[in-house]
Length: 156
Image (cartoon, rainbow, N blue to C red; front, side, top):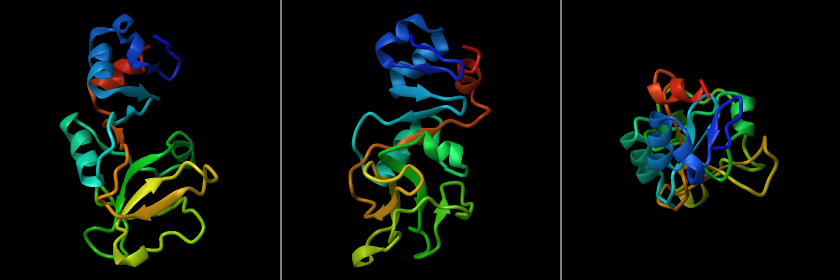
């Protein structure tokens, strides 16, 4: 397994990792970093991506630092205004304090863009886009810091 000091594991080499880390790699796809981020393995709506994360003891990622923003790409994040139009909140119900929006975003085009993705074709610090929650993207999940999988991963 290609283990770095922050801990990362490619699914193709998970058999060389510890049993709990192997289990996580095999069941979740790809895990990286000390905060237990992993990407869903299929394109799903925002709600289905969130359900995928939650079934694995995680939730869509909350990006509250520039460092975390730089490590995440091309996927759903845990931000939406589904509950109250124009009031963006994270999946833990905390308000958005700092955003990394692409120019002109969020724009709620056609009044139907309530969920947030990270796009691939723009600056790493200005690449958030709102779009319909039914659009299909992979999701970036984040395990809680108290998860034994995160603790086990950081030992490698």
